[in-house]
Length: 464
Image 1 (cartoon, one colour):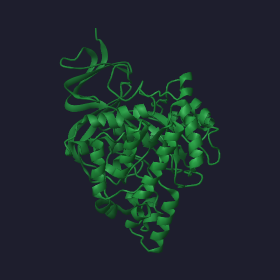
Image 2 (image 1 turned 90 degrees about the vertical axis):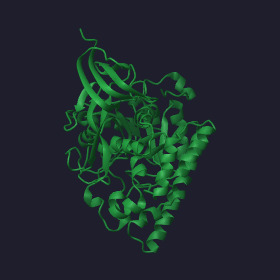
Image 3 (image 1 turned 180 degrees about the vertical axis):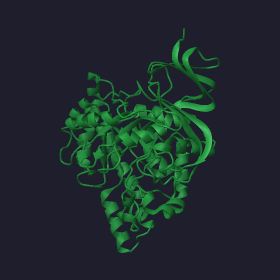
Image 4 (image 1 turned 30 degrees about the vertical axis):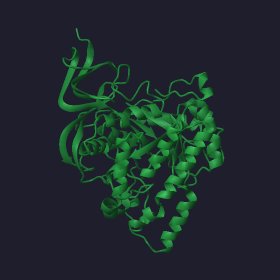
């Protein structure tokens, strides 16, 4: 009689070590046993040899519905499954539908539940001027965190929230033990820099970084972290492109505050002179991609443990919104779900860094950040059996080849990737077999923090 439903063997990657000749034993949808040596009996066994058996990724920053008539959860989660991402945390800035009340959260849960092929969690936000009045309702509906912006990208879809309102919202969020994530660009300084660039007649790829110099980013980060320190709220910066920002986060952590910071995969992969110059609008992202010296500074911070999570900030804009020769007229953001794991593993291998960094940055840390570490984020007993198998299979990335992406353009097209996902399991079920996404829309489940305890009124953390 078999002890387990499924056993996977290979090099099992945990957050603190790699188990050579390891195994993960699964019963139902849950990891039941992880070890090395002779695996236990099971109804099904899959031997992956020297491939890495790793926790499924939690992509902390996904925009599935930023453009009407474009990508939705059917497509974003298809790319996710093909990339070894088993949970997406979706942003609240949907086109025509700001997710800013409990009812809107519940509506998005329903709509996403009908489409998602992998599991999903949600951010909530506020409508300008509403302040904290809808925070409790969104917590009750199940959001895992809140998102705000210090820059006014769009007054209705992606609005700036002024510091006095941020402070009021942070104070309220702190009562529930959740984190406040913030898009970190100082509005006034960016607008002044943009005006200067336009007055100077610079319209090519250089215009974007010149319109958002590093100080616009770090000034916003200092404001956000100080608001968090004063309000008692866990404060997360959702993307940082410059080393100085990680210094700021670490300084607040050393003072005892719960500050965290995110490095999007594009900031660890692309640079301004080699890639933005070549790709133009297809590499336009806020904050901008920086020179190679900043890329390497971020890797040094990652190696030192100063990066909390790595994400994609995934958005699949139609190609016509990314190809204007006037750089500043292009939409900001790029797709990346299909290659998040592959790109991070590539960077780790090239720099001779421990592969366990991927388990921490893509799984364990985001699970804690979003307060569902009791279910997700590690190959440990009692956690959901979310697994990706990364095999050594060098290839040149072609975003149109697999058919798993809504768009066929990518800033990562042509990059040589040494590893690729050959299997993705969601709660113990195979959802990607290395070529085909097997999960149908509706397979994914909504993930939320555990039921809030009364102790949270005292701002106790629910992080695992």
